[in-house]
Length: 112
Length: 113
Image (cartoon, rainbow over all chains, first blue to last red; front, side, top):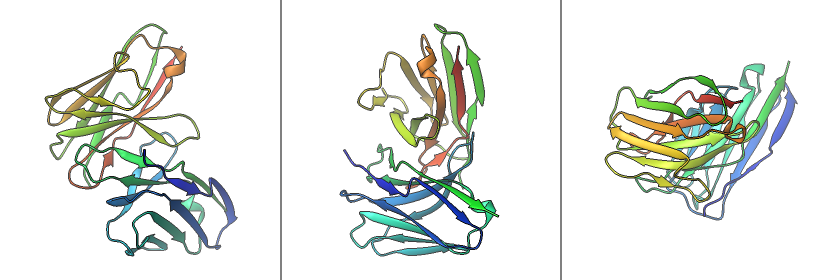
């Protein structure tokens, strides 16, 4: 069974601060996705990382996939209240019939 | 990105009744769809993999006779919660896999009274 440890589980910071969310596993994943979920809605894909060592940027969000494809991080620069939400990392084993393994999520609150 | 829809968005039912939830891929065909469940303040847990034209595969601990899955076409999978009980109240989310990335439906909030 593949497990993803996501940390921190809860984070409340002031607007303008930086933060990093981590996702770690002992298993190798073919790809890793980061999602953001608003209350009462389905997760919305932010990014997919596939190659070990890959770094992707989405405005103020920077995503990194570990060299061994076992871990990933999400860094937000100059956080804004609009960044508030539940951030989920999810690993995919690579098989066509494989569901995603989700981390427990990070509840992020950005206070104005 | 790919579009996945779910219906209904929320449903309230009496204990002992059955509820059907539909998941549709709107702009692509999906031979495989996935059903997840999410309890409040928690992450998504995979319940089962829905395979078009064949039986669904269920994760350990998920009762296949209680959560009936039918994937009758390349764009539609249904999840039926049979003899629902209050502990089945949850947020049910489906996803579909066009290529390597899963796209999620908006979810169905089920409340069993």
